[in-house]
Length: 229
Image (cartoon, rainbow, N blue to C red; front, side, top):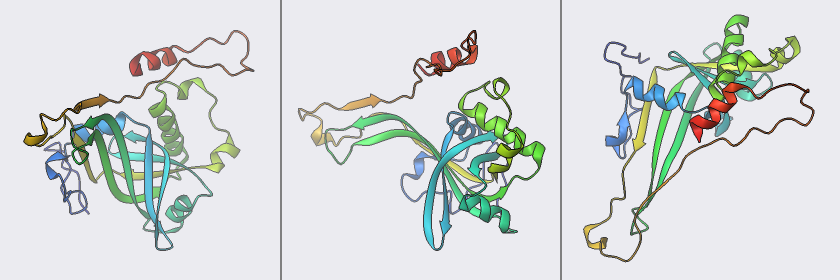
């Protein structure tokens, strides 16, 4: 099992984390990996069920060198991770699209992106304190400050909610930046070429129709809008 190299600030390269195409875009730098993970809150959890690949979207949070993934106690990955002593082999991916790259030829169209792929074995979090902290982290990953501004899960809700933990040991990032890579002979063609930036932003908060009188808009939601606008 590979282990992260804290001394060099990078993750070890393995066969699964070394791309066979566009290898120059890959990175094992810990700071870059953490930055990509911290910029998102939606991941895709992949695993094998009955011999077939399954990929599920879900929420996550990074806490140090560990990913916590949200789920239901009735879901297959959570049942398998809790029932198997060795845990559930998984692959977790996070991707951000930063721009659509428009070339003069259809072949050279591309995407500017940042992505992270994590391979590992998921275990179900059963310690109540770790589980509560992980759920708070998942809420705050999406809306920083929200976990302290809502009612904690009660016993029934906590029993219906599950969390998977995956250690960040076999992990890599991949990214693309810059403009189109047109062929020299295409540069005089009468087609627009360049990058269409893509960003994620939040809109104005919409209050629940039954919001109690006098409940003000939290300051962290105002900050969220200005950060993502």
